Length: 433
Image (cartoon, rainbow, N blue to C red; front, side):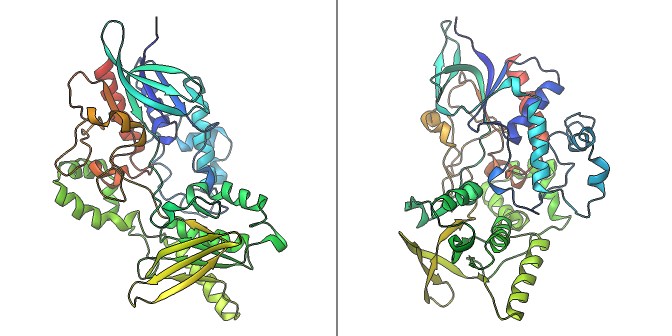
């Protein structure tokens, strides 16, 4: 007899890890299995830059807003690893990213029995068992066919690769999600190594926190290279970290946003944008500005921030990349040369616009079985369940992919991770038990 799991979770990053913890701690007797394409537990492994920190309060971790007594909290991780006092003595507002990544890996290690690593999902379909009960059929890169009464997609958002970069396949042009592995590959190709193999010029595209971090990292890694950051806005902007704006990361705002009509959602998005997008924390902005100022003082400027710039075309050649760049306010054309280009261009949200995606990639074959609103957005319930077109369709939840329906708190950060996990776990229990 074919085994049918209660729930299959696709992806085992922080979102579905928080869900696994919630199911265990709430005592829900569910047969859950998770599939993860990466070879082992990790978080943002391509962006483990020396000195970089996280952008959320460390208590907004995998569990604490849901259960502050949890053994899986960041504070307990520090305690169990003998680093609590040392950590509290570090003169930083937020933890180092590499330490938080170690915390995520530590927490995931407690659930290895539920996870198959190194397994990529190749297809998702709707089916029925021998008794006629509907379920999901999930095929994997190992040739397996798995079955589940419910599905939770927690794969994270797809990178946004804007034109003209979306038509290029070259190791010299890559998104920040491949940063460190891409640098290692370029070193193997003799493009980004030490000494004589160091790049002459590098371009970063984007105005986000990651863009600034990458600019600083490249300047440290290749001190003789010219590093140019191209920004569409006038220049780099500081994040809005007002405590009033930060209430956009409260569950009350999530409920408020969810009930708003689409036109008002757009207005709320415009206001909240600078709390998370196209902006950077003040500490890295000040560090970058000091670096540029000192280089100018020494008469040896090698790091540049060029605002109001849009890349209109590029030519990837054997010896580098040529970028055709427009100055947006004057219309003047510029030509930039780089050994490689790093895209800090963000991620795709769900929606009908060109920079969005209609559904997550793994839903494409079953998208017609689910509803969309009059604006072309996937219809998602307040509990993150995608609304089906037929009542017998088994439950499918999106974990960490619902910014367009639930607002900025669902934008891939840790801010409301644990509370969202409880909402999904509660709904799974009601649907399946």
